[in-house]
Length: 428
Image (cartoon, rainbow, N blue to C red; front, side, top):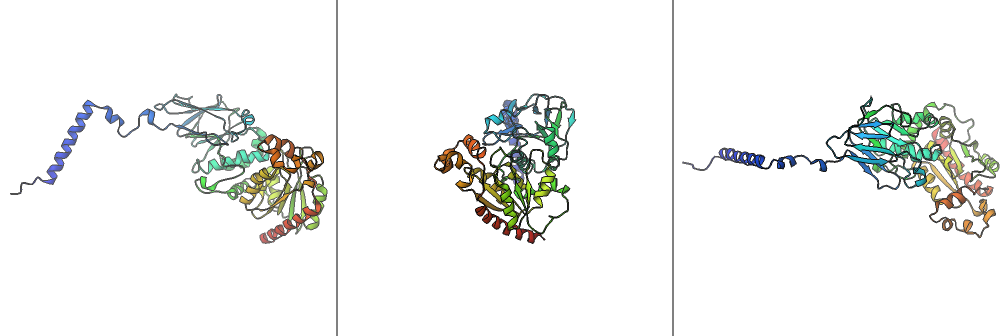
């Protein structure tokens, strides 16, 4: 007779023993089971998560239903069982400038207590930011606004349809960029400054993310996107009104950017520069953009041109409207090498433009007449500036004008013309 225990019998005995042990534990120490399979309230991930370590911006995300009370600029996260949290944020990506940030409205984010009753229900997340700061300056409109919006939409909110919630959204700004704003959201804008109804969202993205000056790091996005992709949405927004007409001649078209007298970095002999460009073969169009320039007009002009040239300044931001392969020449005054590179050269190359760097000689700067050739202002601008942005702004950006050496400038124009001519012929 086989006296070995049956394997099935042993299994039943083991299961019964385990049940007895669990019953004893349940009746004597129920707190053990409360800790199994779930976190305690203090261990749960908070619904409001903020990052404040970046130089340019603070960013917060409400990971769940959120209610906005626009009358107090407060978002409430519906988390009755979680810990009470209060976060403050100014949703504008220039955290390093105290004077600028002092003008930005602060928002409050609260989790824990119930918020106001929902009056308007939305089926998507809120994308919350400020249009204050330097709004109206085209460089800052894109560097501090639309490029960071593009980054958030293609990273954190990559698979969602956000509702734009904007503070300090002036009517003229909304009107000027209406078609571009519609690319990011098909929903009506919620203006934090004049709305009184409470709004409910599936989540809330508060603040904008910057990868640096006029740049997009594709490795930080859900699906890699570049400045070329950003140009494509500008074409979708502003190019849809573009006329089908071609430039009036068979010559490459050069846009020569003009600056207003008295603001600094003016080309003092611009008429001569225009004639020099025409002499090498360009059709030249003078363009002086302002804060009221229609964006469709600007896009129509620049996107159909083959080259653009101008002195370092905000107007060069219009390089974002140029087609990849077009020629972009930046005139770089004394002391502006670093901002010229990071603000315009780097994005131009990232856009696929053919970049030409025209760094003026000492004799081409008006500063030589004011300070003399041997003064440190002229002789060693980098040493004079150091890390003092105020000196760069006051002397090299506001005091300095440019009188081009036409012989030297013509040599650069000839190089630009050759590149632009090939680009024009290639696109036919």
